Length: 439
Image 1: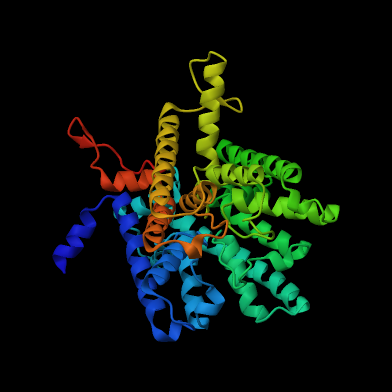
Image 2: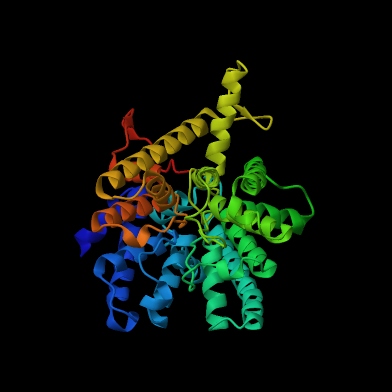
């Protein structure tokens, strides 16, 4: 026992982060395998797939959640994507803070790696704010959804409201409806509520903290990082909505308001990596699917609940590109110089992300008989922890399911964090370099 504890303490933050997700996935898998969690017999691989999808806040499922699991099984899945959304060490850290106990150096390192925070953040205050912010947002969202679901005659309106509110804020994309939110395609209240919750989770807790202090102190305290996140998030949403309006023929027969709502929702759900859908994804035009994939690849923001390359990393890459085209020696974005270290991390993170996507697509092409575009879309959705699918998830072979499981897990931990966990840090002058470069 002592040797195990010493071994655990010797692990680097990135390694502890990956191991933590593995352990939570194992516990969740065991819980779903219990007979009282299952409403219909579900194989071990399908249960493992759904558990990893929940802990990674992806939303891809090989079976119907409502048809396969009892209320207890649904609760297990909810707990998993709640933990996956806010970080598996956050709740225990809040408990330690509440009891007046200090956070250990190792725990602080894992929390910094999990949230991708600057080193100057006071972590014991931040984790309390994260939990408070999460619970308030989810409670308000659940209240609005319960009122609307009850008015619409939705089955189990209270539980459905809680489940979808937590799923939206965690950008998990899990739904108790087999067709996701297609039944609410023209309902502005449900769409806007889900969209707001997804954005509140995806933009990151750093932005929420900046906005809160700006309102509270009535001063402009929005940091440059928060400005970049808000600008990039807004740009992806607006551009994605406009492109879908012109490229997706399936919405052209809808009234203008419903057409705009459908395109706005799909741009939102892809860019936040929430993974809900109000229109069928499989029949969408190829151009519209490419728009969704680009939004999925860009993804959410650091310290948030979503996946993808992240808006800050993409902005750093764009700043570097524009600086090269203009003949500048230094990368600049929105009038600010990008530190070389930040640019190096962005390049490494994006490179590993794209390499992982390419390898995933290659592996699926070997194991599956589906067309190329659905396989690319499935892989992009998995590693981006999005959850959108062209309808092939349940038809994957056992080997294909394992490949998608690996992609989802890597997407949640972050390809760069996975690489840092697997490789030993290079030593310089006898001192190991910091491995918390997930920031």
